[in-house]
Length: 233
Image 1 (spheres, helix red, strand yellow):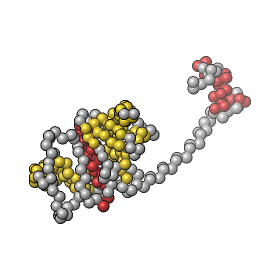
Image 2 (cartoon, rainbow, N blue to C red):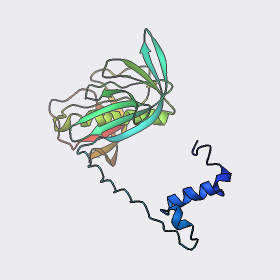
Image 3 (cartoon, rainbow, N blue to C red):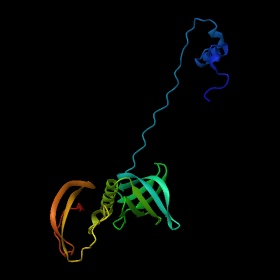
Image 4 (cartoon, rainbow, N blue to C red):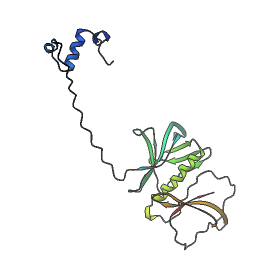
């Protein structure tokens, strides 16, 4: 309740209410009896504006975020955790990359550090499996095939960036579940079409489209290329 019982509608026209109004405007009872004195309003002092908080250097940014239905593996079965936010956070200064599951900004559920060895397993029906920093298993159900693919694509980016300038190996990440029944043997020759992006300012840059003969046998010597990310289909 904003007012007490005595501050009802009738009090606004009664003598008692007039007295309270006089006190509000700084007029005592004696001076108010003259009837000709004008009411003088004294404005309250305005609070001093707060200085903006200094920004923290190297604060993490968001590479990609999506809503998911989350399930945690507990006691031999997956228990629903409801709808959560799933964000890939990136701190390029400290090379710290992680997946954060959260209810709100103030309520974080769990997180998983992303390294070159991080596993993000894409499953049918827009599901994906991750392991958090406590080695608990989480199943994430995305609302669309596009979102799970974009999330996986940015996981691959974070895995590559986590190595910094020391990256010397190829980082691979499935974007969707394969439909082929046969596997490629070592030494086989296959035709691969892919879209590549030059890695620019820690994100996807210029698009490169090629059609190549790709060999699964690794060469001991290879030409030097600028770093790029390829989506193969």
